[in-house]
Length: 329
Image (cartoon, rainbow, N blue to C red; front, side, top):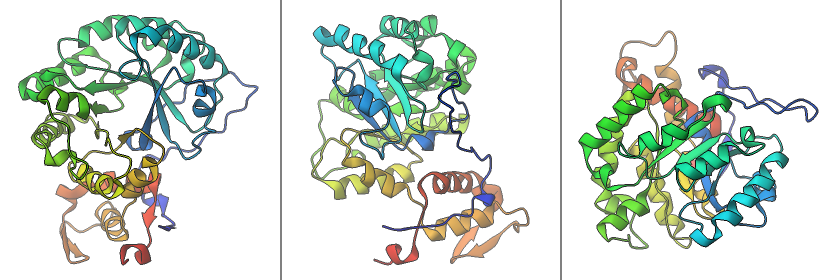
């Protein structure tokens, strides 16, 4: 699939790339956005090749990585995982790869925050976060390095819209809501609570989680939070994964957990913006746009389509725009 050039002058809030001088002190780079995570690869922190992954050498197309000390690491291997992270952090090189750690629990987060070099990761994916556990995480949180939070919604409370509204309100009250880069939906944990595993040819939207995801979007999106999409378990069903990515986008989700590098091009290929959507979004956000107009045989109204248009142009900036020849295949 080819990609056509994008006129980035039409995009708002540009984030210029910064090339880090290796002789300068390493500084955390702010101004991230959820779409820049792309397909986030989960990697057990016990792997011996952490440095190659963390420094962008394998796989080179990776945009973001989450080193896991939770479900992907057996309890008996936790100390090994933490030792490897402690050795890795001071050696991290600056670069475009976004790096996060999933701590096993608040006690592990406290240990990670005290490690030399922890400022070189962008933040933490906090597992099983809900109104009941939020206080435990916040009690050990140290914002001195301006890390981002990626709370993972994966407990039974995610099924209760009122509890999610309470979580949203408590995040606001914490004073750290601007540090929440996105909320991640833990699809497998939620399915496990139901005793379900989706079939190979089924998307997450063919399960009872369809309504749960819709509720989470309706609770968090109006408050300005972004949501990322659940993992897809199968490595030999790229067509189903592509359908799921399309449905993710229809639900307003951007960013998706990947369990293998082979999933990355499928996921991020789905995030490329069609030429038609790019043209409509640009027209909607144009300074001289009419209050209502027709484009591509579609009704466009800037007053009601502005937020959609901004999201489309943000995706176009990160992932590009598909060529017309590809769309007609």
